[in-house]
Length: 303
Image 1 (spheres, rainbow, N blue to C red):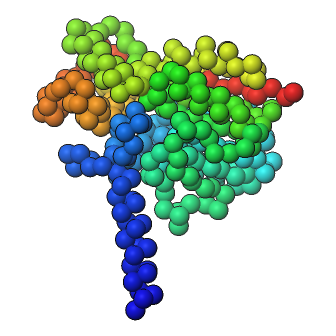
Image 2: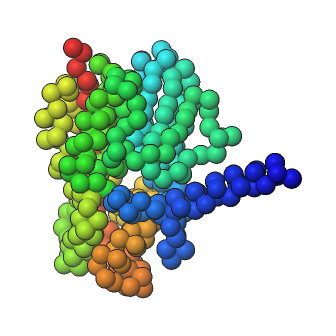
Image 3: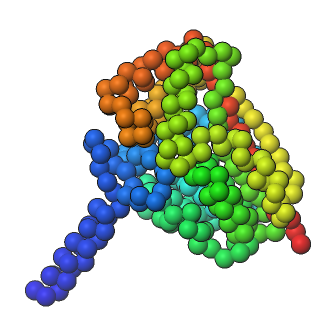
């Protein structure tokens, strides 16, 4: 009888802890850390969006990374870290391509795949990397980060970048993937909408223009060499063919998931936010909008 009570108590404690990790707003689930500026949901709909995003970006770039690490990962016994791994889709694919290497994902939101679907060479850890990366110096051969710097201040991103360099082995590689919006021309409403999104991100202590801060920060880190940059512009809208249509679908989903940020910082209703989403969708073709995606990758010096 006492043993059963103890088991129930432990289960209740676990469930309470799990509930404390989340907050629910308008039917969507979010992380529950007020000190973190990341304000997108972390529920099943957002997981599906992230996986959809991954597939489109992999197709557009024709691969999961640009750093020259294939030989090292194929040889085996290499360690790879994904900072802000989300659902872990990038890690799962990489782990199957390089089965003799080890892959670890970090994220503040526990959206990780079920352990039964996780290969033995993959592990996930829930943590806030703004508090530091919980690994010793010179641990990883390759560290990857995608769409992270938009949700932290420039100062926080620089701190996280230096942490990434710290845990990377001499001779190892780091890679950052970010995006921005570009267009041939833009109407007044489109410009207003973009500026509203940027203002909402800044109000949440995020950085709406990550592609502007990454290069100078990388250049100031003395441990780095061989700094490279590649760019792929991906059309958004019917004007860009099938890929453009899929990218438009992705960006509308993303904008819809920004509802909490937009309504809370701009003091607009959910109904107005939905109306804006519809107009944004039309603007993709009118303004011939593209997603300018960037990869920066650099090697840690061997001393």
